[in-house]
Length: 138
Image (cartoon, rainbow, N blue to C red; front, side, top):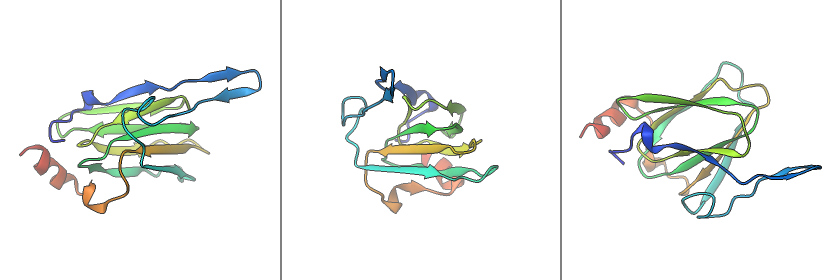
């Protein structure tokens, strides 16, 4: 976790089944994603100009998907930052533990779905950026 860098995250292209009457993407544990999904949640109705995130995880892997609209995910490993614009429902951003994340630039009507490798655990969070940096620099 301490050694995770922004280069450990990646965009995943999820399978898209194209039909004339609409597209379908399905996700199966440990097949399209590199972990078993233990929790799914989504963010929506984020007011314009607001941001989300502002934390890091010690052990949790996540995949973020823009189900609708778009938003920017900025990842920070304590040394470098890297931003991703998510705007396709068949693309997911794999985020390993040990990276600070900020989400912003939400378009109107955007929905961010998150697939998580673990159940919610407040002890898994770094919510203070300086504590995160201290941990990364041990």
